Length: 110
Image 1: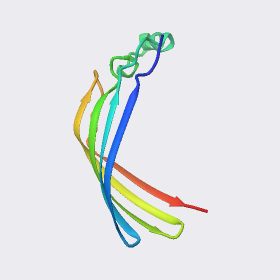
Image 2: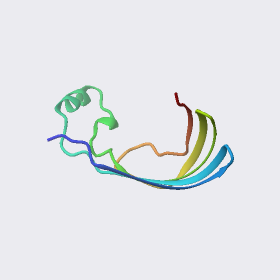
Image 3: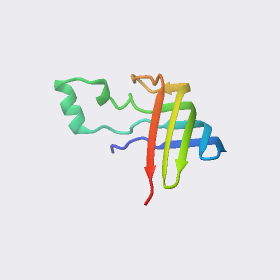
């Protein structure tokens, strides 16, 4: 009877190229449902060392992120950097909030 909640992720973006360089803005939305049921192993461990992570009501929620990024590609190699902040966040139960996010990527094709 234990299962993670379903999760839906939606993203949309606008991208503009300037020769080998490019820049973009992106919006990303995530909606994750609560956990259903309980895991008996987690419940047993939680009796001796209680943790908010072990409570299934502290899982899931919704978040909308606004992000901006830059990239550069030359031949078979590309790099990119994207940063953003949540513009809306609602979490179920006790969870850490997200202040910001930063992603760096490097791709090499062969």
